[in-house]
Length: 300
Image 1 (cartoon, one colour):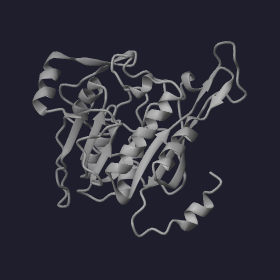
Image 2: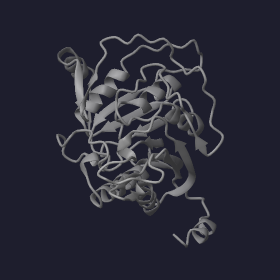
Image 3: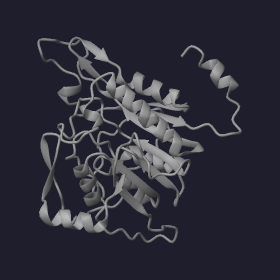
Image 4: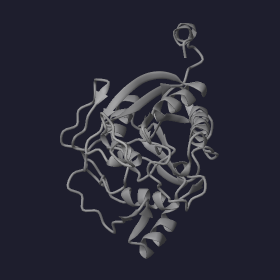
């Protein structure tokens, strides 16, 4: 892990107007013109099916980074599982959605991404002033690092209050197009699941006992068959020692053909994959009695 300093970011911004992510150039803003710092229609989710037809465009949230998650997701998770001043980590940060929400909600945050260009996009999304009229709000400490989610070596054991992240769905979206060694989006099965197992172990290590880790993951198709990526990810996080707290179905809107469609001469009965799994795991605490849980999970 290597911290992206403010000086390094400013130097980068002077010489770059955009960065290559996947097959597009993501533009960087020299100065954000923000109309609203908070969503106009936010209410905490209460059910295990989440749907956000309006993906959210407050603060610096924009949808030009393919595959980034709706800011409503980290907002709900941060709101429910942390308090102001606590420490959140996103080990696969992407365009920085999680840390933007940390900034707005007064949570300290550490974001990590293996792609240096993605780290600069995140720094750019965080490059705005926010001073709410709120006696409770304290400016949080936010850090962006370039590093591998499989080796979060600068994060001390059991210091994180909440881990949440949106990993690549194997090779569906090639975020660095082979330019970055170790990029999970360049891996095929079974190497992808092996890497996810290492990510799960690191998430378990850095998380405080009794606290939560949330992962959003979706599936794909291969030739004529449905590939349930979420099952492999679930298994790796359970193997790492986590307990499954929630399985939330997140509905997809404006579904791209790359995750389900008609191509290569193949057709599907229900061709648009329009859901993802948001798994919320808990790290057991020392006082937990897990016998009942283990008995109920013997079938696994």
